[in-house]
Image (cartoon, rainbow, N blue to C red):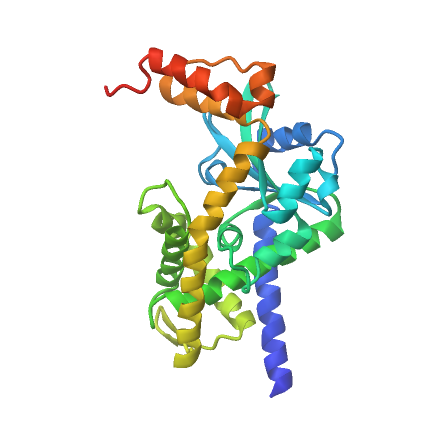
Length: 322
């Protein structure tokens, strides 16, 4: 019996690993890869993950790309000592990068994490829901240092999916389609975070790749030790009542911590968001048509430079109702 169970677990691990590896190495637009190479310069992190709207909808003129740079240690990414310490205490740090690729300006929001932080925050015990929820969604490993680094990052991606599936079983219906379990999960994570997206945003995640989520749920549950009853296209995870009760209580704690954590990150970003002044200038130009010149002083001291910029925007009527 033990050999049979061990064989089933290995089969599930291989099935999940093959599916996620195929997804991670799926080619992206050439301009995305060129952007990453230019952004890295001489830096050699473990890898760079691409995710978000640029992956879902393609790269357009106004697309803001989303990357996670995974490093071995904090010193592997060039920034100040203060920024490294902040990233060690409350990750991730976020930076704004601009590059000209084939004559076209491209922009990206770049988060920095060590591999150890990535591993810890994709585990089931993590109180922070953002990372495992984000990387239970499609992503691409658009740059990697070597095969070993690819394996270590891939293991964290797999762990994120298994963690997400556990919470899907706890937060989802007693019985339903795979999509209904994933929908319940993402509705829960969006509710636990400080989000500005529309209320139906969590549902659109699964709608974009319904087959993907259906294929991944079963091997994820198998690796999590969750037994499943099937009836047609519907599934029922067999969770003991006490386990479900404890899980719901654990989730309530994560909901209570979610927004304060995100607010703390926003406060930290005011002091560590490299390139933040250029990012704000781009957002203002995109949404209002008003161009703001970013001086060297504003680049270095965005908080001190903000009041005169806001006054100029007010004079131009940007804040008036239309």
